[in-house]
Image 1 (spheres, rainbow, N blue to C red):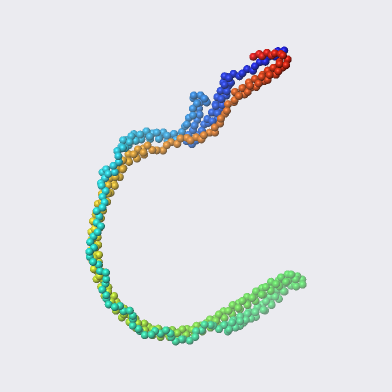
Image 2 (tube, helix red, strand yellow):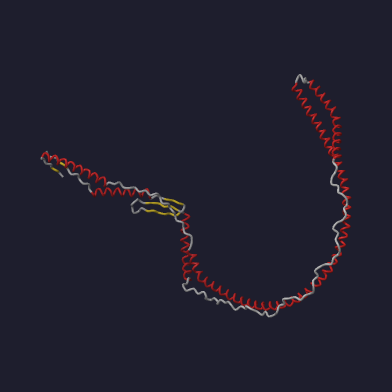
Length: 421
C-alpha cells in the first residue's frame, strides 16, 4: 500500500510584507484623519486641506480680521521706522565715556574755622545790701465770736396729723350726708324698675342679683371717690398748716442768723484792722526789698551791658567769618552745580540715541492664534504576518505528525512510503 503526502507550501514573504505594508499605510491615514482637526479661537483659525498623504496636504493658519489688521499695521509701522532706526544708530558712539568732558573741576575746602574771642566776660554782680526776711507784728487775730442762740431744725407734726384726720372726716361726713339719701332713692327706684319688669329675688334670682351687684359697685365707687376727695382736701389743709409751722421756724432761724452775722461782722472788723496794720508793715518791708532789688538789678544790668558788648564783638567776628565761608561755599556750589550739569549733559548725549533706538524698535506684537492640542488617537494596523506564519507552522507540524505515524506503521510491517513534494 502506498501513501502520498504533500508538504505545506510556505507563505510568500513578499506578498505577506506587501499586505502588512498596505495595512500599516491605512492605519496611518486613519490616525491622521482623527487627529488633524480644524480649530478656531478668537484670534484666528487653523484649517487642514488636501488629501492625506498627498503632497498637497496643507495646514493653514488664518488671523482674525482684527489681528490681521494689527499685523498689517505693525508691518507698515516697522517699515516706516526702519529709516529712523538707521539714523539713530549712526548717532550711537563706542568712544569711551569721559565724565570730565566739558565739566569744571569740583571744589571743596578753604573755610574759616576760628575767630577772635579776646574780650573778657564778667562772671559776678556787685552786692546791693541785706534783704529783709520778716514783717513787723500787727497784733493778735480774733478766732471766735459770741453765739446767737439755738437754731430750730424741726417742725411739730402732732397737731398737723390730728388736723388732717379731723378735716378729712368732716369733709367725708359732709359728702355722705348727701350721698346716703341719693343712693337710698336710687336703690328703691332700681327695685321698682326690676319688679315692673318681673325681676325679683324669688322670680329671677340671677338677673336680680346681677342688677344689685352693678348697683352696689357704682355705690361703692361713689363713696370711694368721696373718701379720696376728703383725703386730698385734708392733705391740702395739712400742707397749709405745715407751711405755717415752717414759716414760724424760718423766722426764728432768720433772727438767729442776723444775730450771728452781727457778731461775725464785729470780729471781722477787728481782724480787718489787724490785717490793715500788717499790710502796712508788709508794704514797708516790700519797699525796702524793692529798693535792694533795684540796686541789684542796676548792678546786674551794668555787668550784662559789658558782657553784651563782648558778645557783640564775638558775634561780629563770627559773622565776618560766616560771610566769608558763605561766599566761598556759594562759589564752590556754583562750580559744582556747573560740573554736575556738564556730567548730565554728557550722559544725555550718550544715552539719548540709544533710548530712541530702543523706543523705535519696541512695540506690541500681534497675538497669534493659540490652538489647544487635540486628543491624539493612534489606529494600529492589523497584524497579518503573525497569523500567516502561525497557520504555516501548524500545517508543517500536522504534516510531521502524519509522517511520524506512517514511519511507525512502516517499520512494523516492513512497508515503504512515498513522499510527493
